[in-house]
Amino acid sequence: MPKTRRRIPRVALLVETTRTYTRELLAGVRRYIAEHGPWSTFIELRALDSSPPPWLKNWDGDGIISRTFTPETAEAIKASGVPAVEVRSSKLCKQLPFVGMDNHLIGRMVAEHFYNRGYRNFAVYSLETETFFEQRVQNFVSTVKA
Image (cartoon, helix red, strand yellow):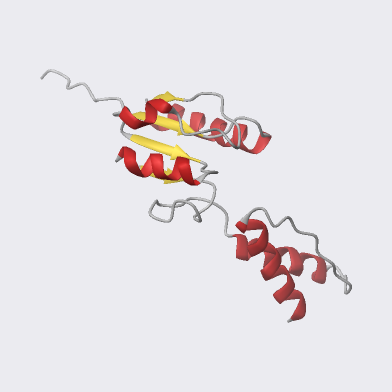
């Protein structure tokens, strides 16, 4: 009986490559492919504020893994019609499946961690540039108040 060749999925990785976190995220994708692959992946050097790649408009791949930072990139991913997963924030790509951190839980766990170690005076510093910072702070503060 002849073997049928399995088609190799083609996946675009729209992930900025400027931070350790995201390079480790890409290393995790590489490990997944090594265990469950093969995949054909496409990645290019990207910064946080990179424009949507021009090739995305006509790309006929099988999927996209994205850390979306701009509304323009979110719209380009949606317009591509290619199945995609968001791994940064559910704010810009509400229509996409999201895989990421439970920021509400993180805020609560940080407060509980310090409380369980005897701390009773708290302060918080936040960057208001990202929704996930705000979510973590809100739950940290509400947990401390409780």
